[in-house]
Image (cartoon, rainbow, N blue to C red):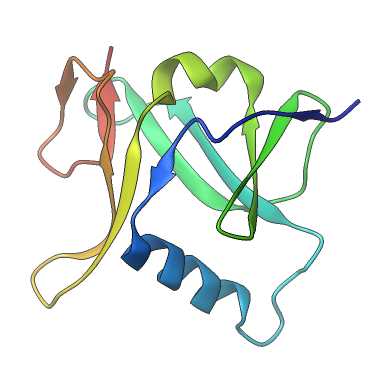
Length: 114
């Protein structure tokens, strides 16, 4: 059963542009969706997940600016209200995460604790 929810996370304009650029690359698997989530590990306890993956039974589905997204239901409590940004500069390049639920983050910005 597919559960569709309103978007639990937000993406900046630059993040949306980068995700769409990746989706338009030659050989992109159109059966995948943008997975947003967390996993154990990292220097602060949990690490962000942002990749393309096939939907699983435990996923909730949502859409952001035409991008089909999935997230494991149990991850919502860690990510609700988070903003994902893309920085394309020379000194810092990649996706960044601004999570209001994080009680602490690591220096690299890709892991957190609650």
